[in-house]
Amino acid sequence: MEPIILASGSPRRQEYFRILGLPFSIMPPLIDEEIQRGLKPEETARDFAVRKVKKAVKLMEKRLPQWICGADTIVSVDDDIFGKPGDREEAKHMLLRLSGREHRVITAMALYVGREDRIDCRSVGCDVSFAPLSGGEIEWYLDTGEWQGVAGSYRIQGIGACFIRSIKGPPGAVAGLPIRDFYVMLRDNGYPYGA
Image (cartoon, rainbow, N blue to C red; front, side, top):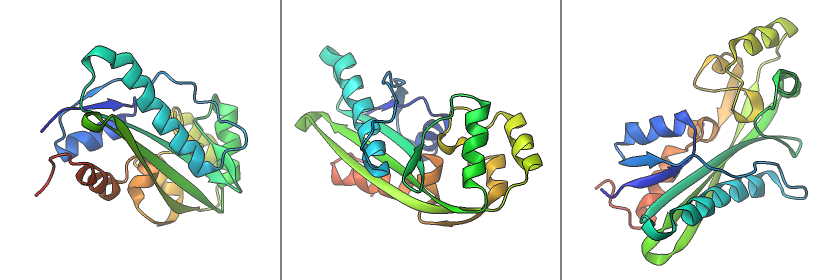
């Protein structure tokens, strides 16, 4: 299989690539992840994913690989977009907003196809229902530090799973890479993976 440049610093996406047995190297994205006004949640996730790939393409110039993958996950409550919290207070605010209600999580995946010099971008969403959280639970979770560097201030593949009542849609969309959709994307673009 041809190697893929993963334009992501996410340890979860890297782990998914390892589980799938995909040969890859990491190029952490160097983009400004400030949320643009006027973009809807899905548009924001897609914008970030595409910009990560475009930045990697620009940085690789002369030794451009055939495949580059960028992805981004955002959390949305009432069309308010939650990216990665900047500090503990912002994380606390996000968790208070998520407590006892349903929210939308969207992961966008962008794939650069070198032989055609184009980017295919797709997004997958799911609805996540949080249990009501007490002030003590929020403080306990904040003390774990698990909220750092993740959209919406929680990780589904960690202690944050304690707060999730239900998920409607692919759980991988919450964890940062919806595996089935990513597999289909690779196959649709001619990447030699699977049967």
